[in-house]
Length: 243
Image (cartoon, rainbow, N blue to C red; front, side, top):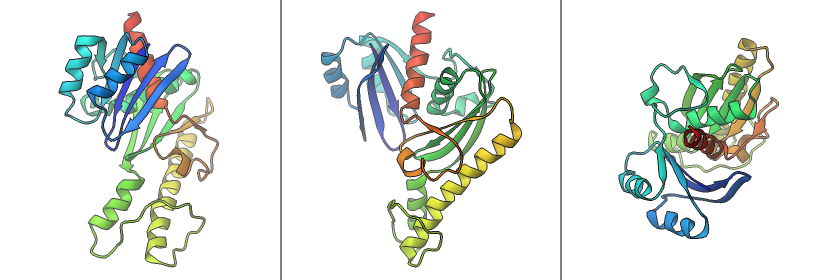
């Protein structure tokens, strides 16, 4: 079985993946060595991969290197798609893992991936298996935090399900701006990609921690894969083990 570690800006995920799918998964602010030891007692782990956008992972990496056949996803890691990003050293490993997973799920389609998490990212991979890049903007919680931190009087607001455009209180105005703004951004990005890549028909995937908040607000046909990064990391690990 494979140990998959995905360390993001807001939270960290650990999953145990077998050939038939995910057997165990936890998400918390920080994954500790003790969490890995606990999982190792329950499952026969043979290989491990780490994708991290944070820097303080040396202790975990050292533990993994001594215990498993271990890969830390980096720009030099062998992957199943052609990475045509111009600044590969600055590309988030979670975005690359999503591209690998998307191409594996829909190998003959142009795929647009929208990842709604700490950041709102879009990533495009062609039907030829070429990862071309995408866009990055602030995610939902980052927008709420920015409005509060960089203004004198705006309140720190949390997500609520809304169905209005006109906020009649300051809290409602913030909710309208953030939630409707992300929805409009997603719809615009999808529309532009559909114009640029009309054939083969574009497949749109929504993933990330805020999938549930936005899956019903997008005015285009989409599929949701909350664990797309985990799927991609497992595919990359298996590919490198086989090689």
